[in-house]
Image 1 (spheres, rainbow over the protein chains, first blue to last red):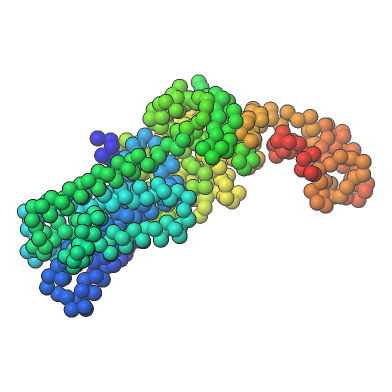
Image 2: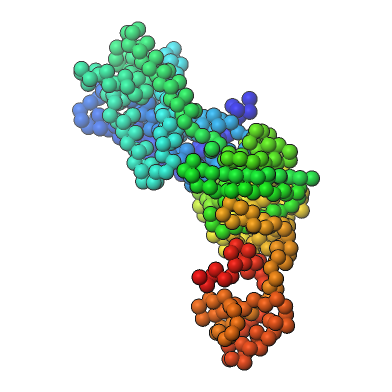
Length: 248
Length: 297
């Protein structure tokens, strides 16, 4: 019980004070990952299904980008404000800390995800019936990317702030902008298998399936869900094994 | 009652750097104990081992009887640490520090609020509790972090160079807070390389150098460990007398007041400005760490 409580407290303390001090950042997040791509699609002569593809992708990309930023948050907590160092000397489980920091990224992306999923719901693209599955795909994607973020952070203990920022942005591009998140994987033709490689495009494919924007055959769905779950478990295990709560 | 016992602690990092060779010490409950040493002496490493953040290579340490290596979770219920060079989170308010930390100790929201209020009043930040830390001064920010530990209501507090970079007024406020806490029965261990701080706030001091304990005792006891009792600072050089040279100034150490007055007289006769005072902790510290003689080398 204390573990769950600690996760929420750590999540809230990593989210609420920065949000309260700069609420505009929410607008930037929603705008950059959602509204800007939508405008691009409209300007480039999209509309119709292309718009829905972008909106489905935006709900995943916001979360994906914020989740990879747990890497930055962890390094910032450790190296600059020494919050992690202080927490090591408290009766807190290391996993509570990790899930708490990851939860803050969920809080940060929540308004954007809510906005885009609501749009898909109100326009009838996804039904209330499919919402739990869509949310599960989004949550699995969040867990996977957060765990990847923590794993990367363990390799960057001596990196300069510039390198850390650049790495975070680079992984943001790799997980959000390059793979078929904003666009269907079928557009990649014979390279569509690349869409299976990262959690964000798997989650986006699942949402597209439920929204009727892409194929939803049993085999394909199973593959996407399996990859999401496996990457989630794998990276949680790696980050658990690699990260050190108490140094030796 | 023994609050902390450290027995033959040693720490060698994986890269072969020996941070602590062999240190043993004991701290009693309600004592403010200072680890004083130059940069790289092993102060922070020792504190981090005691705070269960770092594993020692050898030796044992117990806090209120609990083993810091084998029972870290039990130890963590009793301790709180303010790390070295901590900068408060700019987006936090002092209240955030004082409120979230006790919550993480398992306190309910009402108790956490109550403790936060007490802690913020103790560090004189209650009126600034809603201000973002980035708008506060360096001293206020440091005290905001300390309030988080105070509100946690732990018995054993560790502060790693808590006043480094603070101005004199802010430093005094932190010292005053620390002494108030000792009065309330808290045990405090702090590290510093500020001699005045060590002398002003400590019940006892342990001087460490190159990973070893040099000496331990009350400030008065440590000052009594050198035979020289007075110093005469002369703006000039008196021929035929040994001194520690500081550019155009020289420090002459003497064993008694009479000898010091003779040096003072000589200096004034030669037309130099001179000042006489008892040796301070800094003089003793330098002497114990290798002697004044080395300063001239």
